[in-house]
Length: 308
Ligand SMILES: [Zn+2]
Image (cartoon, rainbow, N blue to C red; front, side, top):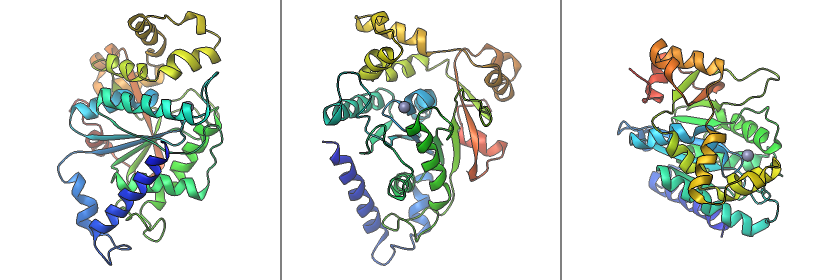
């Protein structure tokens, strides 16, 4: 079943090429690549290594974007087929694909799961091309990804793969089955806790106070992870409530955490002292040095949920 996505991407790429017209394969018309953003709506794409990673890093802002009519796609670079203590392989991948689609449906986010094995991701040219196609097909204004210094090799290499794609998305001779973008998107990283070689720097912080329950609802769709695999890894499987409503409350208690001091400072910068100090839940992002470099007014355009 998970082969369908690869096929669908190929089909979409072919469709895009045919829409661009015969002979336009290497030289997509500027209208075609600019048109999706011409309606004033943003195209946001986030990459995670596993089918619940984007949800944790950007599920809140994605909910806010979707509510404002912007287009958000989450891409899991692996199919998650290793993330369980008693299940695995194709059956687990199919289960996690269904969970991802349900998570996306709950908040209005498009969810794609690529068919790469969980736990074995490498920054190859083949996977880089998959990332390049995704960014191009989405005509992304903003690309979100993990930093490449995470504890999990799949997370690290997802960060590297997106960095490796950051310039190549505008080079028509590379991955030429999918027309190149004419403008480089802005790339940003999800928040993390890792300190080496340097700690995460929250350049932008967004209040989730209006949507925290929607974000938890999104995470709640990943039953195999939130209530089975992750508690098993942490040795707290016996602490997970059995009743669905009670376990969702437990999920909120354990997953919705207060902003760090650095994120608090960023909230004060973007919301002002009074509002910024009152925020209970947030997501923060660090600008990647590759891709377009946004100034403050560009950041406000890319994050329209920030106060004017
Ligand atoms: Zn992960």
